[in-house]
Image 1 (cartoon, rainbow, N blue to C red):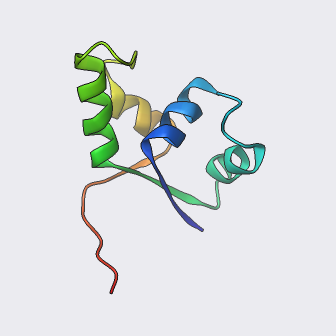
Image 2: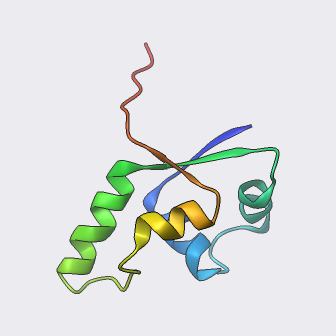
Length: 79
């Protein structure tokens, strides 16, 4: 299955936050699934961090790669 995490899901995944459902955690952790993170989420996190509204790692891209998530850099338009 292909999954695209939104910004909240990504943050909750990194923090192992219980706000993220067990079903979602299992889907993200399932090695048979391909998990994407939007470049927009990385951008949003960087903005929130620079404004002091969010604590996030300085090496976000590395953290994403270490969790075997893929950075989605394209826009997909479905008609």
